[in-house]
Length: 435
Ligand code: SF4
Figure 1 (cartoon, rainbow, N blue to C red):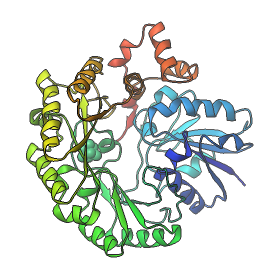
Figure 2: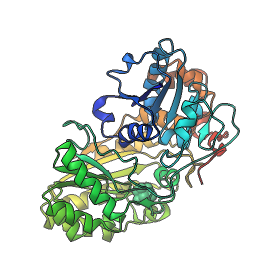
Figure 3: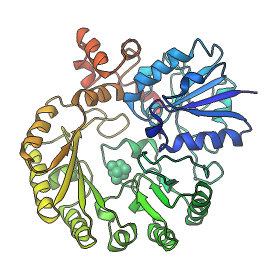
Figure 4: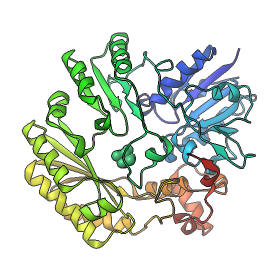
């Protein structure tokens, strides 16, 4: 009998809202495996004499934890294979290629890829190792319900609180040029309405919750969203969407969801730049959404922007400030989350530079938006993310020898290679065929 571990390389509070940690055990159990356990940073040290250890890589900054986990677990699990998966494994796992035994490149449903890997057969589609020159992403053509986790442990303080996670679909029909989710989960696939209703009914009952979190890159683009919301709200269930595009917000949607906060992601301040990055949200869409929000007693608007986008001018930066102030005149409580643009592999912007001057632009915006709460990630953590997302295998030893992003950046600076990775010539991810 095989002992299999699934690890989310961060805290339980963060990992419990990740659908992958719920899907994988169901999928493996459907393949006939019995001894499957899920671990987080708090308890992975218990893993001993296991056969296969899967680590989901949702964010580049989790690489430091993932490496620590592997270092800690290797001596206690001498026969185990260490396998990475998740969005970072699909887009560009090359910085970690010598640290893991293999990566699963794609989505595991409707395939035997997990079994092949557990049996140490890496010579199949969807599996990348150090010895392979290319790999083809795998994914199910249709999303069924066989592997869907009905039982989902919940936690009050997690991203969605005590809610059943209901994945409407994967992939996105929109065309934003910067978006990684669009390219690594292509083509967009949505579940059938009757499947979603069945899953929601069972999920609510079994987990004894009264809230459903709708998971999809763009919830409002689901064709039957109104029908689904009507069904759930008529049952008295609270609904929380993971993301809504301003141009999909309607009167009905707000009436049924009753959000306290409405999130809008214009990404760029000016209409022109939004057009260029193909965000395709007009100022009119934004103000229609704000108008509807006002009418439906939404208390707060949260705006997401990026700086350092290709073709950006000083004017575009000023437009972020203007747009925010204009919205603030309509709804008192406005919050802005703003971060530097990170060029992602496989996207139309994969060859763009990571703009170090973004740091000053962020400072300027924060200074100008005095009466607005402005959130931004630590700039060096974003720089680290940018480097890792398009990095190659040479970064492996730097990662291996650093505990966190600050140490990692320091080592790169010391060897004078940080600049190179702002726009690297070597593009290892080209060996991954995402389409
Ligand atoms: S709408 Fe959102 S998920 Fe879809 S392509 Fe644009 S950024 Fe990506």
